[in-house]
Figure 1 (tube, rainbow, N blue to C red):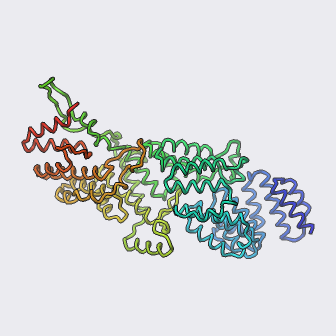
Figure 2: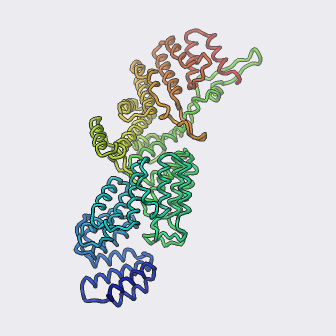
Figure 3: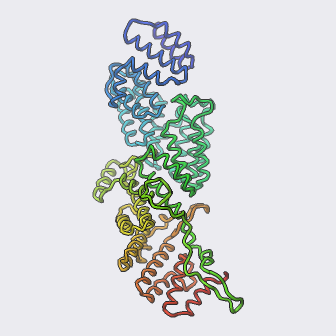
Length: 627
């Protein structure tokens, strides 16, 4: 009776943070029993570590492993196994929480699985270990494993005595799993958590749901509610998370992904990084500093915001820093290549701004009044791009097409290749489990983000192939560009934008190889009829400050295809047929179809070649009137 009373007093003193009083109470419980001595030593070591705010975490781990040698073996070989007693299981749980806060998730998972394999483990320890395993699976972006762990934990007898708070935590974990699986229609599991779960966590989850649904205003509202609901007596050691990091990172995601405000997003991400270590916190404490993967995840977000803002050099440097740790992520390799491509050509909007480009077309004017003559340039000046640099084969990380080609090759190696039959098999297996390919079939790890599913991996492969074709054309490698473009055109998950670009790149590569007749067979106006406006940039709801890239509508895409077909026909020597093709875009009418300015120049050239000088003069007067 005296021992149970003393244990209750120790527990109360520990929960109140009175570690000295707790140590005094433990000192009077000495016993000759071996396990009681180990129990007392474990408790004293835990109290001393907690008293110093876990600044001596390494010393604590060594002390526990010296008491329980089996734990040291599990940590070294990375394989879980049943422990000898419930006390050893409690010690393993303590070490797992320490490893968890230090970002050592693999070691923590091994120890927690060992706890669950031990039959004599206390019911409360089993429930805590199970929920911590679920948390690790969620942090590592493995929602399928987290779902399996929850089902296993609910089937154990220890869960039957779970409190309402623990039930609410499981409901919240299920909701977070649905968020990672992007089940935006599912919110039933959150209702059970309303009364018991911290409002801070609930508001964050609701904000995440609205973010996935694309509702920026609602996401910001719930995020503001989360900020207000955060405990006023916040301490990172107790909460295990940083309020400033979470809020600012979430704000950056909303402004970057939905509102398309990359400069604002960059500011929030930088604030989150600066808040990683609170003021006055001891940096040597593993429980205070934010784990390195989280810091790199924030830096990856910074790089994305810089890339969206067309700040290619700083974005390139940030991606390189993240790549040193997450070199197996094909997305990072693609982003590096995109930095190189944007540095060479940031936009093609100028080709469709007729008023500005016509000013460039006029070289000078001669005379005045009725005798005024317009002198046209022989050709347009090339678009501004980065200075030409000597080729180094991509060996040196720099903003060049050579390095972009190297990055794209690495991205293709990291992405799987699946045939249509394999995709059908994966789709049918996913449907039988109640989901679909995008939700249930992760195939490629992409840290610091979630793993890529089958559909996401193939869409990413389309982007890599498209960029590879463009880079190969820029490097003058027509054969390689043709191969990439043909592979892209045969992909299953092909968006309208990629379909259009695959056709244009194939035609350009064939033209470079002097295969004009084959290029003409590739470019035909019917292609534009299959393009979907929702898959062309920018979307209708994009803000006015979004960076324009053309063609941005099926009508403009059709005009580009017609222009390229007319150009190829001209090169083939069929001038009359080429002029008839250009008529389809309304160069000689009042059509409002947006066409590249090169199409107007081509129309003038064709009329002169066919001897229609008056017609060519009228076209010039129509286009240069007012300049």
